[in-house]
Image (tube, rainbow, N blue to C red):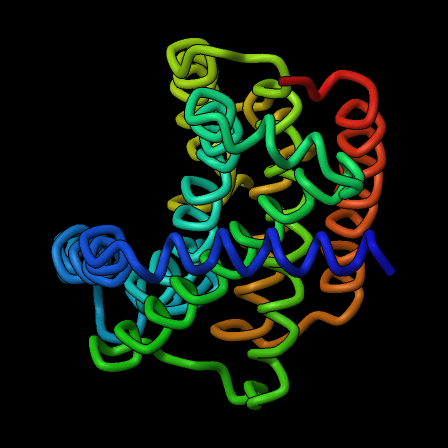
Length: 271
């Protein structure tokens, strides 16, 4: 029970820090809108095919992207993009808690160290789900085309996929900052891998059209499986076999990384 009480208290603290920062909360809401309104609408790939005979452009787009509207394809990819960048900075709060002295106080309490890092993970997952809701709502107003198989239940499954992804990614970056005292090293690591993770996935472009060596990276990239699951549940006609593969990968990814992260936190998290 002390483990659960500690986890609950620390998670509530993290959420309150986020909600009580008006600038951060505003950026959380405005950032998806900026990406959707400007980047999303400016990437008018369908316009490149406007000179084709009637019906052929839609056929080409459908074959390449699974939908005749590139905005719908990209808009769902933005959910993965935003979740990835939100979770990448999870470990930074460990560094700040250590520098401000809060981590020392928590480590002197009976709260297990696994609960300390797990509260950071839950906070990043909640924030990512909130941003995904904002993105989805904005995309609907900007012309997102949902598949005929879409239902409100699919939204809950999207949230589940985001949660699994955030758990795995968050623990990767938390383990890097377990003993860090300066923010420069974690920031350098984040900047090193964020773009490869994003572009070696299907966030903006189908992996089937990528070079073979990038396809190999995309096959093990969790961003690819999150994006595919979200599109299967929203803009594509659901392929349940592919959806099951996506959830199996994300579930395994989250379970393995969380186990490793908690074990390392129990051993190496220090003042």
